[in-house]
Image 1 (cartoon, rainbow, N blue to C red):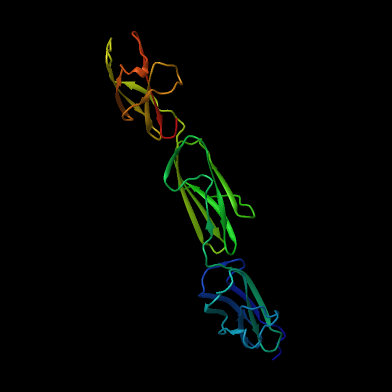
Image 2: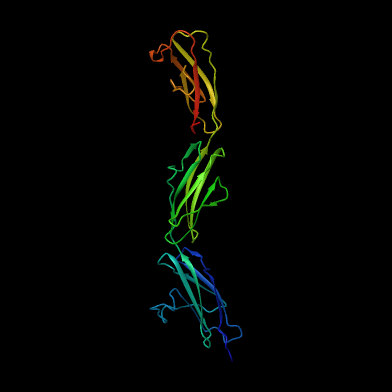
Length: 289
């Protein structure tokens, strides 16, 4: 038999650049010697055959010969990062053919932090844009940092060479925003951080009095009324006796949506003289409007 052609060899798993995150991996591939003598040896190695100190006798591991070959339980344990698998096939007549594939070995989740906002995953109310930022890293290689808002399509964020990232949640859309920041490494491992912000830029509706003080007050004045806010909700109701718009409050009222108070008209601190006076009431919501 004349055979002048070496076998054809391919590695199908792992693929180039694949992230491998297990110490119990199945390598796969194909080999074919066509019309030739047939494959006589099929081997793999996790060491570079051209590298210094390579042991030809012990560093090649046998593979059961088959057109579609595989080896179970291959242990890639060791240094995290870029790794290479070599496979060699020979028909015993021609030069052996060697194929290799480089991949990433990664068994640790990436690290992700967010400290710019000063928030946790608890819901907060804001009437301005909210700045987020932090760092992401991985013992092997970081693939991406993304943010998803209210379960929407993830947006890839720009990261610096040091892994720093930023994101601004605008205040242009009212309502709750559930944010999930996710760091993903090349092995597909992920770490996520959640933040919850309710954007509310709309002022509460003007308070409405439900009491009538009458024509004259001599000692105390009972006031009550209602307020409403469709966004974050009423936080505090304030009152002021006389004064101008923007002046400091005289005090706070009991209640929020339904508020009330009894004002001691005889309080010397009010400096009220005989005659007409006004009581002003305003409210502030939980977002500060």
